[in-house]
Amino acid sequence: MKKRITALLLALLCLCGTAACGKDNGETAENTAPAGQTDTAPQDGEPAAAQPAEPEEEDNTAAAERYVNNLPLEAQVAQMFFARCPETDAAALAGQYDIGGYILFARDFDGQTRDSVTQTIQSYQDAAATPMLIGVDEEGGTVVRISSNPNLRAAPFRSPQSLYNEGGFTLITSDTKEKDELLASLGVNVNFAPVCDVSTNPADFINARAFGQDAAQTSEYVRTVVSQMVADGTGMVLKHFPGYGSNVDTHTGIAIDERPLDSFRESDFLPFEAGIAAGAQSILVSHNVVNCMDSELPASLSPAVHDILRTELGFDGVIMTDDLIMEAITDYTGGENAAVLAVQAGNDMLVSSDFVTQYNAVLAAVQNGTISEDRIRESAVRVIRWKLDLGLMQAAR
Image (cartoon, rainbow, N blue to C red):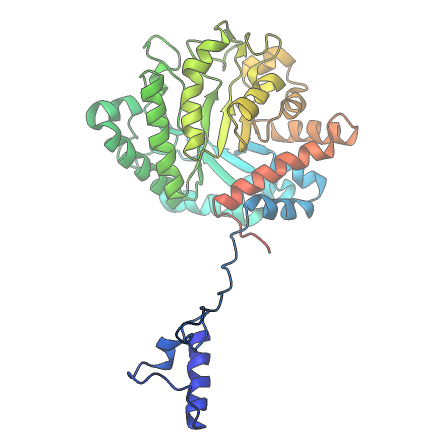
């Protein structure tokens, strides 16, 4: 438009007999006066006029802060939940509470077609006042919520170990890209992957889901996957901080990790650090009790563990819990105050299969002064910034 206006003005000047109409070599006015520049070249020996600087792209943190400033407290609290998608009335619930996100499981895809999944997920987005994070565990191998349905993919995605053994990191990269494309085509914008746990022992509970190599190779795996997911615009969740090790399944009870802190720094932290350096947006904290960090609280509820993630590893993205109804948590807290403790520990999002109960517990804790409004706002800003980074929302200027 600027070029057209400039050309018209110069044409008018030419009609008036001025000397502004083009150069002697026959260049058009459009070519001699590109947008953002003057149409008069500096004379020999004259300094070129300074051009206005291009406006710098605003950091999404500021845009997120402005958005959260206009959210009521209730919505800010709801943004902190990555709730398990309910089997009925999911769209209505999303609209009622303005929930931060839904995590979908195999039951949400069983028997569905691409069209039915896409339409259902879109109904959640249409109902929500704030665009939702829609997440799934599509790790490959033993955890394949989407690709286990043959209507959605001809065969389930393979495990990272299987892919690497066949085609190295080249196959890991192409597999990640295919996952990202499939998820995006359905309306899923977050994959709860990659698994960053270092495990070389096939007897470990986590081994089948892990990369199965030492810390250095696992770090390269995480870097490869995160870099591709960033390029594809897919949200990722590194898990399970601070590193699962050989601990038992926390879905069925409390796991106590007796390893010294140095072993984490020399091994388990490395894949997480690689992921952070590659642009990881979220990290999930496990329910293991890690004695060298906090012998009293599960990692997901421990301020000390979150402080290590923030200060020692320098992570400023979204920290989230594993599901708060897993037995490692319910055995520890009785299920009553798990969500409140999780917020106090420093989590920005709570993965919850009991959203309404835990939302009300957190909201009540803010209203009675147990949790400050500033604490809620801090996490809500991180969640909204993540959504802006993923392109789910447009930053208001």
